[in-house]
Each structure stands twice: as structure tokens, then as C-alpha cells.
Length: 352
Image 1 (tube, one colour):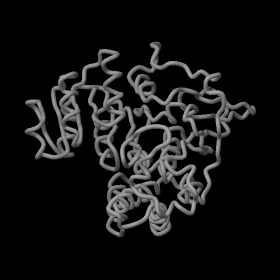
Image 2 (cartoon, rainbow, N blue to C red):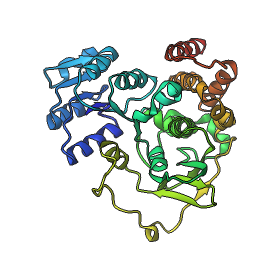
Image 3 (cartoon, one colour):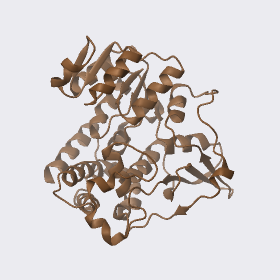
């Protein structure tokens, strides 16, 4: 396989799966965590390594190291691997997804922004989602009429905060996720609920037109539910461990044990909550965005800019959603091609 984003949580779990099933890792692509990358190189012996910063090349314990996005695209094109696991964060991950598909490779996709920004121009038949929510929906799918597909959210770092205090939330506050540890951006996206908005858009592109929604399930043991037309509802229970969807991306006929089962007697109870607009203002545009999914490129660009401003203390936490909504109302552009996606992304970023 080719692994993009090897030192993040999904990358680390992917390498565990690769070890379990004796899958050779041809290419490792990482950012700035060179110490962990060197450990991964020692364990998996890739043929090629690509990192983000050219200055770090001498620190990498490998004889075949490159840097920058152009080299990521080149090594994908040159690789013999049939599977690319894309766990890159942000819009940066879109070109590698497009390049992988153009090369006829299967893509195990954790890079949300690829589908959020460019879903209309991506052949999803070649995509295997490795977000637990989309995996859960895929797992539950049957040849029966569906009324609604539902994914769950943890609620993020501020699900129990006094709403009046949110405007003073700091970057450190956003990182205190109640259920697990993830990267900085996705943890902020979890706190604003932008992450779940993105996952609803992804679901729309992956599974087609229909009704989609999200609810909060505080223990993160249910990842997806499907309401069938006959009145029944099924739910996908599993411990929150990315190795399960990754294993199925490697082999859809998975028959090995990957996780321990959820013991409902031990769990004892579950709590569900509605996603409220006063706590998560981004939910104001949810319905309109799902009706106009091509506008995801605007939401993604505005979110990435707003997060950078928040990290730099130029805006407050609640201003992230406000910035996104303002951009969404200003730009009603519908991209008609992949080139349009990149043009609109650049235009939105310039305006903010």
C-alpha cells in the first residue's frame, strides 16, 4: 500500500493493520513527526518516503526521501501498489485522491475534504471510506428501502459547557475531547460540529441522494443508524477503533477478529442528544448545504482559514462558525469541474 499521513492516528492504526495482515508498505508520506516516522521506516521498510519540509530530509533514516506535494503525486503515479490510504488532513489531500483514482488505484479515504470539496467529480465506486460513521452506514446497508441515514457525533470538547462561556474558549480548551485524542484540526472541527457536517456531505456523495442527519451519542459506541421504510432501525455498535474500517478497506470479506465486542451490560446506558444550533451554529446551514452539496468547497475553504485565524488568536472560537456561514451566504458558486473547485477554494481564501 501507499500510506499518506502515516504519523497521524489513522496512519498509525493503518500500519497496525498492515502488520497484522502482512501487507507491504511501499510508500510512507508524513509531516513533521520525524521521530515516529523513523520508527515506522524501521518496522515497515518502505521503498520511498515523502515528508512535508525539505529541511527535515537529513533527519529521515532512509536513502530515498523527497519533500512536498508534487513529490507525493509523483510517488503515487510511480508506485505499483493497488491501494492508497489517504489520511492527510485538509484540502491538501484532494490532489492525491484525484491522482490515485486517475492511476486506477483503490482509495481508502479518511481525508474528508476530498469529498466535501470535490465529491461531484470523484468516482466513489473506487472509494472505501474509513471514517467509522461511513463504514457503519456501509456495514448496515441492505437491499431494502431506506428512509433516513443517521451518523453520530460525540459532541466535542464543549458539549457540556455553559453556552455563554463558549465565546471565551481557547485553543487548549478545544483539544480536550471527551472521548479520545485526535489531531488539532479535527478536534477543533469536532468542537464546532463542522466535522459532522463534513461527514454528512461525504455520506451524501458516497450513498447518493436521500435524507441524512446526525445526533449526539456521548459514549461513541454507536457510529451509524439506518431508518428503513418498513419502520425498523438498525444501529452499528463497535468500540471506537479505526482498525475495524481500515481492515475492511484492505479486505471486504474480513473474517478475522479485529476488536472485542461491546458488552451492553457493562455499558449499562447510552445517552442521545439533539445537535442544537445555539451550541453549534454551523448547523444553521446543514439542510441547505445537503441540498446543494457542491457548495462544500466554500465551507471547507472558509473553515480552514477560520481555524488558522483562531489558532493565531485573531478571532474567537464562536467566530469560526460565523466566518463559515458568512462565506457560505456570500459565495453561491457551483463548481462545474475539478478546476472550478480549486479556483473557488482559492477565491474564498483570498476574500477572508
